[in-house]
Image (tube, rainbow, N blue to C red):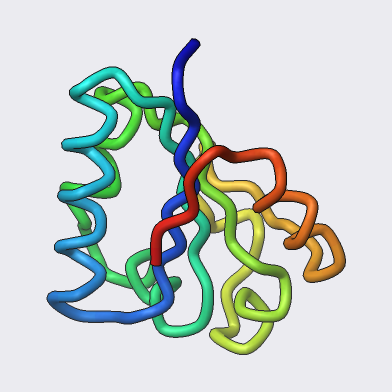
Amino acid sequence: MTKTVLYQISHDGILAEEALDSAMTLAAFGLEVAILLQDQGARLLTEPVNGRLKALPLYDIDTVWIEASTLTALGLKKAALPAFVQVIDTARLASLAAHHDVLLH
């Protein structure tokens, strides 16, 4: 049975980039990885061309969530998000974590 990993990215800058690298590495080794962008981590979506973010589907990371309150706080529009990014309500965060075997921050 494949382990599922939820990688929560809440920092920006180099920490967020390293988190994406780690998520892609886990996926390359056969783990099922999903990413949750919160707080400053969602700034990855505001960068002009984030090659790592665009590469996620190549690593079979097809599930990326952004917390609704973070989307609002950053002034982002749902329509401007990449197709594989889904908005998740804050009330669903606990159940999201419960459906994964491992939670990384």
